[in-house]
Image (tube, rainbow, N blue to C red):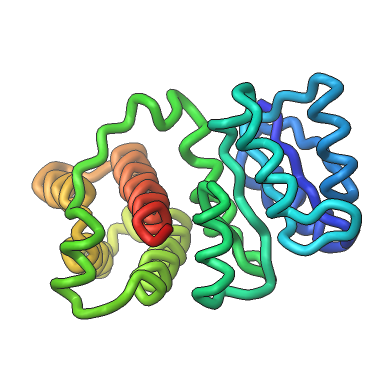
Length: 237
């Protein structure tokens, strides 16, 4: 599976490529700016997803996105903008341009993993998302879209940490601590309106735990966060 990484800063490009490589088996293709990426795409490159810097010489990330969305063969390509800003204006630019999401520099592994998760295994097409409508969540919590995105990203960070830490707790027999951590994750799902994810965690708690079952549910919850993040971004456009 090919992943296109576009950034004129070689250090940022290498850091992002390293994070992608740590998330699974991907064939990473790099481009030094938007124009380089456009030329490679015109020459037949067909990535499964593109991570692209926002501001670059010759052709910016938004300009490349506009070109892609005008082509039927790239109209649905997952396009993740990479930016050093997380203000509302940048989010608006990304969503209005048709971006499927964004990651903020300095990079966090969980942010990158969210976007790659849907491409792994059987893909997002088989995933059935059961969650509260973003507008209802905003009204219930009394917050705006930007704040909800912060909450979702923060929860994704908790899940990334949990995927590494909960397995050893189970293997060490620290059941009480494990249950407390799972309870907090369940509460987070309920707060964010992730109904399907909260049900998965509830079912997990009711059955004998295994590391495989634990990791499978955490993966499902992280996928729900990723999907809900995309819905919030779409609603904000």
